[in-house]
Image (cartoon, rainbow, N blue to C red):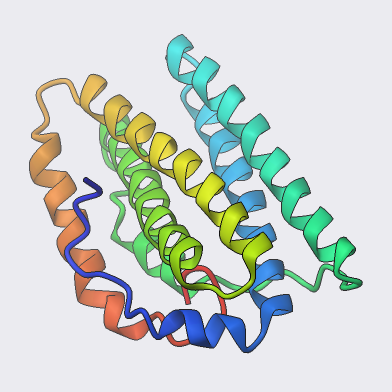
Length: 193
């Protein structure tokens, strides 16, 4: 369904379980960055009213997810750590077209967002199925569904506003690029790391 070319190595869950506080802090900031991304789209493409409406809802949902993760952190007697750099997202960001026609910037931002949501969904599914912590297993099952919805929202808008651009071809380019860098990730107790 997600179209990802490579699956995450299931041993990644073992790495996550070795440092739950790290994955929770990283996850919280992923939700914050997803909120910021939705706001970026609103600010830079305000002429697309339906997109703005959906990005407002998505931003609200993502900040709610941030709160949910933070609540788990607090309930475990932990504290939210400092923000971590997400090298995976940074590499995907470099793949986006910038400074081209406005349409290309919008399309690539939407596809970039869809890909991050797809990979997050895949990782949340893996966590929900394999992590020993039952609270986190249930939590990640819930979030997996949200991520899948976000993925389809972004991909749908890329297709809607592609205006003759071959969106499926560009989406495959994103998927191929992501597959080419994925071997660098899945080795740290972070959502994308």
